[in-house]
Image (cartoon, rainbow, N blue to C red):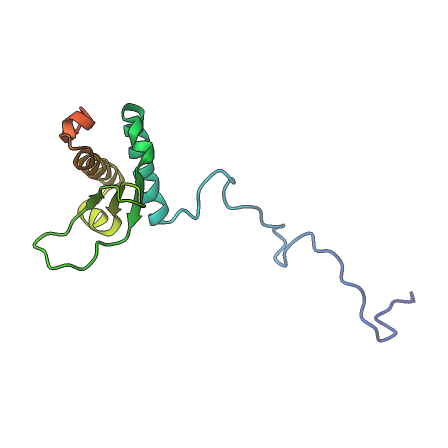
Length: 145
């Protein structure tokens, strides 16, 4: 009989596990690292706003001074309609801001394509309001899609 540490009453050192207890091997990643598995709806919406802003900044370089924000819902004010976004002109210490409200837009658009189109329209409308121009001037494709 061979002498082991278990026969003397002290437990043996644990062996490194190369397979799980069912014999199927170690589990690997579920998806490749470049696939965004944990992108939340808020992150996806923020990306839609950023894509829209990038499209507009190519033709309007003065938009680099404008701060674009995404908020969940507009402030509770007695109104007949719920705004999808708002443009706030620059103050003494604050830059000009365009705020896009995520939840009202998500409730109006069912698919991702509809949501992307609506987000772009809201951003164009608010930028046009901020610059004192028509939406068609800011983006010639406004309202076509």
